[in-house]
Image (cartoon, rainbow, N blue to C red; front, side, top):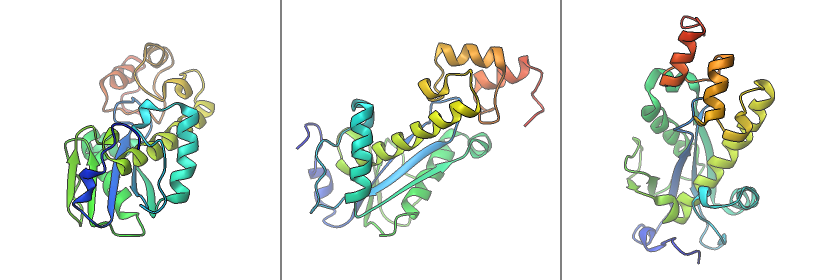
Amino acid sequence: MQMGLDFTLVADAEELVAGVDEVGRGPLCGAVVTAAVILDPQRPILGLNDSKKLTEARREKLYDEIREKALSWCIARAEVEEIDELNILHATMLAMQRAVEGLHIQPKLAMIDGNRCPKLSMPAEAVVKGDSKVPAIAAASILAKVSRDREMAAVELIYPGYGIGGHKGYPTPVHLEALQRLGPTPIHRRSFAPVRLAYESHGRSGEL
């Protein structure tokens, strides 16, 4: 078994456990993407780990394997408009809720990466650093990250010049410089301070 993953955390549930994770709380643009996964104990997936600790090639391979072997999985999201309206925390909780509700099998327990749980119709447990402790959360982190990374690569073609395919929307020096030079795009989060400042400096605070 992959070091760091602990099946004893889910042993108590004895029944179907969904792991839930998100990607994209920190970026200045794009949706926050979540995933919920119920793994099949009869079809183990080797090498599951926190998506950030895996190479891109390994994540891509596991992405396909998880979707093939899991009992149920769902990828969901909250859009930029929802992030700006609700704030990033509430939008993340909403996206996690959507991921769990999108499973075609109802889990008995949802294990959520982090220290907060969304409102769900089944018991939920928050697990800090869960993506490196609970296999189903690790699987969810991989689905969410690969899905969002692919989306950001596609966005790069629509909004060239920002380097979005490389930094995935995170506030890197390259991204911040482009934001000041070019101004925000429709997929930038206006509620985030660097974007709001860029809107103001480009005289576009009333737009979009």
